[in-house]
Image (cartoon, rainbow, N blue to C red; front, top):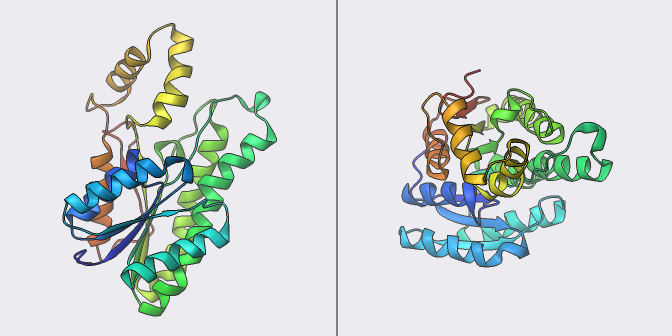
Length: 260
């Protein structure tokens, strides 16, 4: 798919990996719908400005992806603004840290609800339009934790394993409509998810600073010896949009920390 003048919805697009994906798609010529929560509206507006600086058009849509009506409104906003939906990137996600024995049912439901059910609902909202047009690209954000379980994030890992299975099933369903469905599995990307949830837990256990924890983790666990960037994930998204004969795959962007 040539991305020039196409329309891409990026959930969780206000900041972090979502912003990186939005900008790389914009550089390739796509107009962007930044879907995110009201709490990060300022960040969403900034992403739109950065997209426009790349010569593309952008619009932000406040969306809680746990609510199907809001997912439908997100899809309709894209059609109203740009007349089409070519790409859906399901990037929005949450995490927290707790062993299973200490994890509340509410927190399990929250993480599964955003990461896995939210991905399902966004796809459900967009698929009818893509099917009618006979073309489309869906990219779901899984994780290296969706390839190998990790202690203290069982809910997150479960959701990301689920996304890989969902991606494969949906690829089977939508292949006859010329819609590809793939997943990206990021590794260590310096985002709020790491800074606010994962690194405090790691640093606390080791009695070191957040920066020391980040440096040690990426040095010791990543064969390339460096973290990934939001731009790296965005480049993978562009590749999957442009690849006409790849579907049902889960591509690692981890610097080698996950090779399975």
